[in-house]
Length: 184
Figure 1 (cartoon, one colour):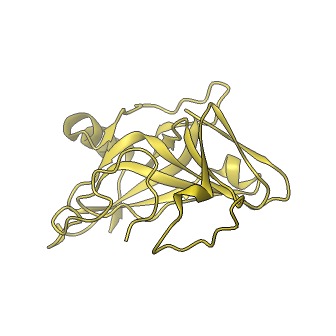
Figure 2 (spheres, one colour):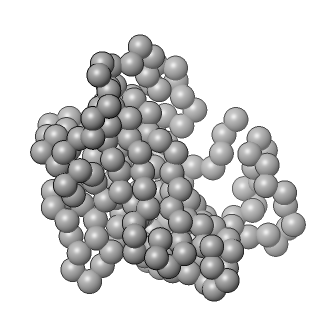
Figure 3 (cartoon, rainbow, N blue to C red):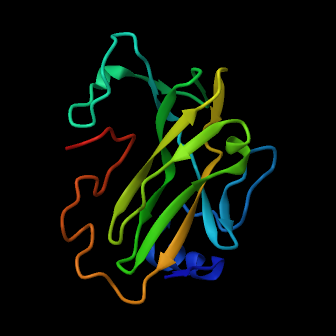
C-alpha cells in the first residue's frame, strides 16, 4: 500500500467528491489546524457532541448500547468530564475510493493534553460523516473545539481494487450522518 500525497487527495476531493467540504490548504489562524496537509487531511469536528454520563449507572454494552448514557450538546466548545469520553462527527463527509483504505490519527495538540481521538479505519467504498471518539484520559475536564482540527486522515492506496467493498456488503454504517452510536 502506498500513502497518497496532497496532489492526489486534492484531485480526488475536487473531481470525485472524496471530501466535502474540502479545505485546500492548512488553516491555523488562532485555531487547531485543519485542511490539506502533505500526506493527509486534517478534518474538523462538528458542533454536535454526545457526552458520556453515568447518571443512570448503565453498563456499556456494544450489543445493546443505551442512548441515555449520553447527554447531547450542540456547542462550539465541548467539555468532557475527567476520565470520560464524548462522541462527535467530522464536519467533512467522506467517500472512500474502492482501492483505498483510510487510517485516522489524533492531532498532536490534543494528544499533548491527554485527549485521545479514536476512529476505526474507513474501508474501501465507505461513505459518510466519520464518528469520532474523544477520550479524556486526564483527571481534569477537557475542552474540544468545534469547527477546528480534530484528527488527520491518511489515505493508503492498494495495489488493486478490493473484490468486495464496504458498499457491496451494505455495511451497517454506510452513509451515516450525524453522530452515530454502535449498531449490531
